[in-house]
Structure formats: C-alpha cells, structure tokens
Image (cartoon, rainbow, N blue to C red):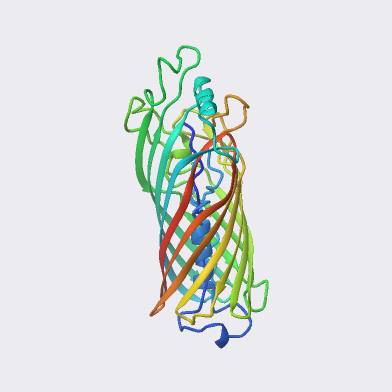
Length: 378
C-alpha cells in the first residue's frame, strides 16, 4: 500500500556546528570556521535527516533520509573521535495532493477508482553516529533504529466493489515495525580550503534494514507491507556532495548539498514486485548566532529536498493521472539551538516547519518534525 512523504528526513538533517569544546566563541577565534564544525554541521545534518531519513515508497523527502539519510551531511574538521545520538519524531497525518489540500470529493473519486487512501504514519528514529577525523580526512558510521506505525483505509476494487458496499476503512490495515535501518558509512575531505571550511562528501548506504515485514492488524493483516514502508530500501546507494562554511561578525554560516543514488539493480520486495528508491537531492543552508557567548548557540536553517519518483513494479500510480505516487519537493525552515554542557558534551534541538510542499499525487506529510540529540567529543 503506497506510503506518504516521510518528512526526513527531517533527513531527518544532520549538521552540527558551533563553538568548540573549549568554549571558544567568534570573538576569540580567527576568521575561519574550524572551531565550529562539530556542533553546527552536526545540527544541520540532524535537521537534514528529518527529510532524508526514511524509506518511504511515496516519500519526497526521505532520502533517506531521513531511507534514513541522517548523517549523510555530517562533517567535522576537528581532529579526533566523537559520537552523536539523535532522536527524530515524524507524524505524517496531513494529506496533500500536489501542493494543496485535497477536497473530500477528490479523495472519494480516487477511492472509487481503486486508489488507496492512507491515514497516518508515525516514525521515530534514533541514530547512533561514530566519527573519526584526521587533519583533512574523516569518516562517520551511522546506525539508525526505526519504529514505525502505519494505518490505511485500504484499496477499493472498482471492478467488483463500490464505495457504498466497501466504505473507506472496511478493508484497511495497520502495521507496527521496528528494528535496524540502512547503515551509512560517510567520508569527507576538508582540504579544499586551507582552513578546512570547504570540502567534499562521499559515502555509501548499505541494505541492512529489513524489507520483508507484513501488515499486522485490520482486514489486511498478513499482507506484505509496501516497499516504501519497510525499514530498509533493499538497495545500495552512493552519496556524493560538498559543503562550505564561514564567519561574518558574530554569525557563522554553512551551505551543503548532496545527491543520493541507488546503484544496485531493482530488488525484489515483499509485494512480490521490484523496487528502487528515486534519487534524492538535498540543499541545506544555515546561520548561527554567537552573540550569547560560547555556551548557547541559536541557529536557523533552510532545508530543501527533491526526491525523484521511485521505480519498479511495486510502485503505485495515480488512478487519475497515471503519475507515480512517490516523489516531490519539500522545503523546511528549522529553528533550533545547541547548548554546550562542558567536557566536550553538547545537546541540540530543532523543529522543522514546512514552508513548501509539492508532491506527486496524494501523499501524507508532517506538520512538523522534531529532532533532539547529544554530541560528545573525546
């Protein structure tokens, strides 16, 4: 059964940057960004993960990745070991058709012609990241754990049924699944500039998440869960991108861009068909204010994700237009802050608020995405 947009997201975004573990602020540092990457860039990626973090069949913002694409942007130029633990909550409970709210008449028409009407998808994602950086090179291992609940009103057969005899919900189903998602290994090179403020990102997403779950409740219990609702995509993806950052006055800024592409062939999924997630393109920019000193750093980010339509025989299409029920473009404004607790420990929190949503066909989107986390340098 087709799935709506998973707000990666946030994603799920993941970039962290602010003052360093020694509490240095803008006034105490030279005019480059090296003291800030560990928290500021991590915070950006934390937000990014919200949109790119999840693996959803009709997910414009997943990338992941939400797939879970958190951490695909995670870059720090501070040498040594660090770890990050983040939590993201996404409640996709709002229907949109294209860029607007669908009318009841449109929903009834879609159902009468055999299109599934989904009602709610709640996803919680915890990501543990382990990072090592030398002077110009770094690598990050990101392990996501997902818990997802989904409900749908089901699908009417327009040949044998009518809305009067099979109203919405009478043939629906629910699912509840949790486990490890698709693991990511991300490398970065910060040698494009002398101060390490610009660099390249390259990585791989491995097919470690489950792809064989079934619906667990309702009349449709026992049927295979949609490919986009599985904990993993079943594909091996490459991730490529770059970033740059800098300072002006009491502000720090960054810009990051990535593309994620599935390099494995179409894979068999639980629906008995084939599936491969569409390419995901993300652009993220943010600004950090250092005027409050070294301990508290307010931030504001703009996160944009473009997800191409998924491919394969397991991908559903709009019964009226024939377009794939997957893919779209979303933009989020994400205010947040990091707080340094001392001893190399920082905590952060962000809320993503949608400012633009344009998806293919009828999909579910979140009204907000919440991310909380803790970052530790060693």
